[in-house]
Length: 224
Image 1 (cartoon, rainbow, N blue to C red):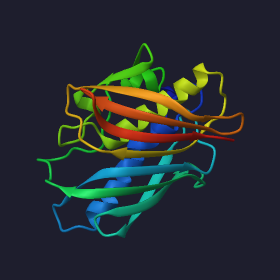
Image 2 (image 1 turned 135 degrees about the vertical axis):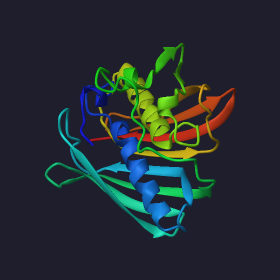
Image 3 (image 1 turned 135 degrees about the horizontal axis):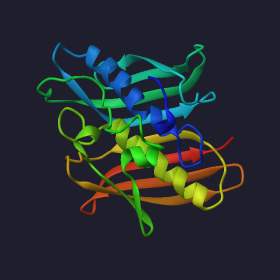
């Protein structure tokens, strides 16, 4: 994947969430490769751990993953253009009905012109929460919000909240749990709460809801 200015987070760094879809895709396909032909897997949990400097606009990121437990658990890594590891990733998945056809990873509309992740995802602040419409280009082939996109949105909301509170620490890890699918057209409300706000360590919890029902729970950690 080639990064652009669209991958910039609220802290003006490359957002960890910008590689969320790539990680979800490669981990998901590793799981599907371990299942019978034609089987499909959806993510229930995704972990991203930053272990190197994320590259900037114009640079590439490559991903690799292998199944650890057939159909339910995969591990992998993302590397920069020089082959250095930058993110370690893991995913738990579960079997679901295969969709009718698939044309490849999600590519949000306006990706080349977006000036950052908030604009790309259509995140908007409404009081003390952030709202994102589930557009068709943010959905997976089953017509629900892509797991990597919900991870990206959660990480961006956590970063925005930290920045607004004066924290300059970079995101170091993300763990998200998907509790229910979000259909196309549904607005997702993300509420972020700081569980620990220190000078060298910051822990945020971001809960995504639709019509008052929890659909995602993410823990986002920031530290040097």
